[in-house]
Length: 154
Image (cartoon, rainbow, N blue to C red; front, side, top):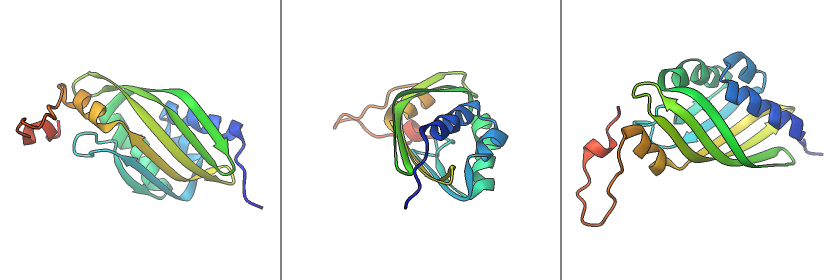
């Protein structure tokens, strides 16, 4: 019989996630967790791939606080079935360097085992987020000259 994660565990995980407290988050991480946040890491430093509990804890202890303040999740839809959960919503935060408010759509796909996250996948509306991180719209029209300055890290 496969593991079914209780909804209350998923909701508790999100409370810990939103707290950004590495100790609270650690309680929900499997030792071999595989954590991926899709998006251009050159601009959105919170994007990338982390393997193992220590690496994910470091992400919450060091990477996120260096890039963002006041992270808040507005969940519009949370589905829990079997050992998986899926969330669709919005991430609201403040970019540390510029103090710009960043608000973009996000989806999470999580697999649990014994109440622990073993796989986490985050898909960001990365064009919207990147434009907010760099502070201006990116012209994607066919006759626009793509400029490296549009995609340079801040």
